[in-house]
Length: 109
Length: 116
Image (cartoon, rainbow over all chains, first blue to last red; front, top):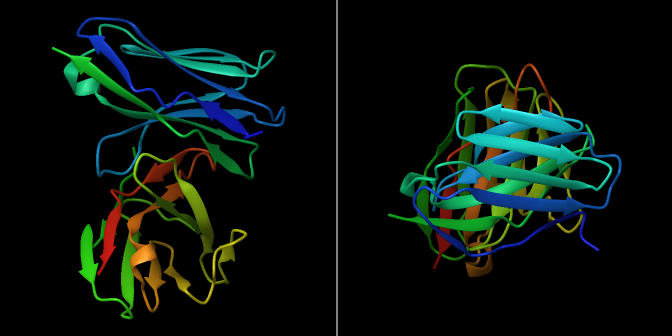
């Protein structure tokens, strides 16, 4: 079983839709949870960084962590064509990082 | 956020040659940097952890003699792919942790290596 599972998609939504991206994990030692956005042929860009369970909001983005279910989510409200990218979840025990495979998102104008 | 740069952004080389990729933290110091490779439509694979002033730590299965890492200063780490072969063609990305939190990684823009 992989440490981090992420549905690769692709996911296609109309502009303005709410997007939900998810990852599950198996290691209960993960304490830090991140979401990265990666445009084609570019390096990942940190979007959200959270510690432990709970919600964190930043503009149109909301990150949710449920440690009891070992499940994290990223919600994008009012999605825009510029949100079209691959979204990677990442998790850390504090010493080791693990990345999901990424979900490819396309927002159609 | 902090800025990490990489150079070159794209390199094409002949099989058997060596290629050096630079990773710089532009506005902060990084005693640790990470090197990843990424194949098309796949996630990041950690290759090694670069430590300033000491030897790099390589992940299992990564040949340390093939992928030479030097972390010469607090703002520069280099990855040299020695005797490159077509199977080394990939997207190489470095990252450095934030000075505030080791778990907050900032990535470079990546270097696309094509070995002919």
